[in-house]
Image (tube, rainbow, N blue to C red; front, top):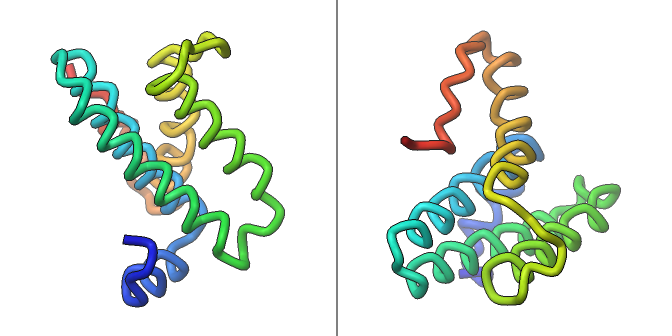
Length: 120
């Protein structure tokens, strides 16, 4: 996936808020599949989120966020593949990624706070 030139161009054309919101969608899917008991599918979505975080790390405009993105990868690894030593909760993940989605909605005049990352 990371070698796809078209994906990379499309990803780099997005604002950092759009990138992180898209990553949040993958994290949400990982959480939802874990709740349904499908750990393999959950981990697949987590891996996709980590691949997108890696693309964001490689995006030149995000130089100042590299540490933040590496922390996100470590947190996801710990939460979905490790012992959750950071005690990361679903709520914490939603809160982080939803903040970027909310910012985008406000910027676009869509300030409805639908919280599309959270599905009942």
